[in-house]
Image 1 (tube, rainbow, N blue to C red):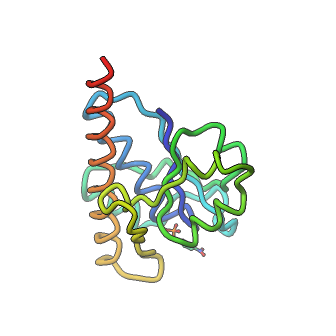
Image 2 (cartoon, rainbow, N blue to C red):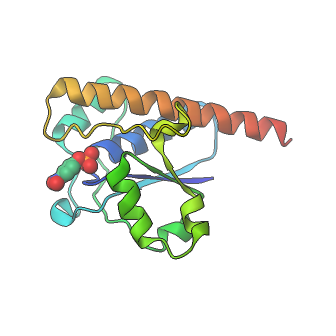
Length: 158
Ligand code: 4NP
């Protein structure tokens, strides 16, 4: 299973999601490929925002080695699921989709916890450390739920 996390900048929410999902998958011995990307080219090639690195570090997750990249059309082919953080990301991905099949892979991350509600992970970029902690907690709950559901799926297909 290959999962792509998408936000706008790819320096706050989606790298947190990449790091957190990878750690939970490793802890559960679940083979998972995880990546993240964004749509804003201003931080191309940069490490995640220091505040994102720090909130992850405080929860035992190291995302300091991740680097910003942009979403590309081939990502629809390379990944099984594409999780977006908010409606803007959803629309950005939709604009790149070639077929309805491409969009079948795309889901709001928070829909893992609240199906069909299309709730956002609020962008903490212009916020403070409370906003980063809040984003971390929302992402962490969703990533735990993703791993849980994949383990159930793996077990029932054996
Ligand atoms: P992110 O936050 O989408 O969670 O990575 C942002 C980071 C940077 C920018 C926007 C959002 N920016 O415009 O530079």
